[in-house]
Length: 360
Image (cartoon, rainbow, N blue to C red; front, side):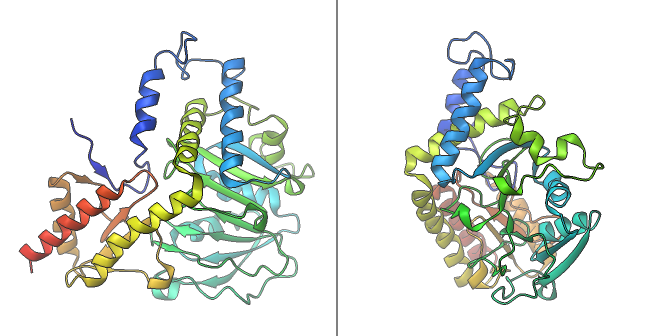
């Protein structure tokens, strides 16, 4: 069966060369007589896998030595709680709400302290990023939180907020490893890996060492403490061994392509193909202000829910998958992560052009 162009927001496409390499090793990893799915996480073989994965990630992102890399189960949603549990020393945090995921993160953080929503784009259905150059940062705020790329609404930051000396925490789940990033500008970066890196069930947390506290409230579960993972090399309990292994393969694959600068150029070309069509179309319209458009998640609509549904059905019949917009917003959405080839985006645009001509 031929592989489809999968535009899912996550779990999402993975690079075919990586999948093929994994397929060769799935029964017997490099002659050890067992699959990675079977081997002990305490074995020397697996220790090498996780060590190489971390080293390659550090190389890709240029992660400074004073930052820890943690592989944490539970995905990004668990981080909505772990971050305030661990970082709310004063019991206060400032959140910028630019879509569904930052809104959920702020709601979760309210369980652990005072949350100030210091900027929001909810007034225009999260179709833009608010001005973040001069924000009312709380003097007692322990951190400023953003979702740097909103998967559902398709917005992304072009400039980072002026946090006025407070640490910046960023959910980069749907843009993780899609372009270069200056890690030193953040106190903490995290991402659920199922969008741009690997299979679901794992979050990667990159945290500055001085933010890893031991003086936490007693209510914080042992597993939800960043120091638990830092002290134990992400091996406090059995980690998501398979996901870490697959992510390690993807890290090496991205390095082979030329790293994150090369990936950024490819992603810009892909997005331009789709956005240029949407800007010229009489049937379809993008939902995000041009300045804040995501390179990863492209929501668009016809303006009529029934027409949107008909287009989604037609794309499915034509061999494209997962183009239905998130249930909370409707319309259509094309997620064009690193693994989506330019050919896939061009094929989608060719189909949409044909559909528009036939249904004008």
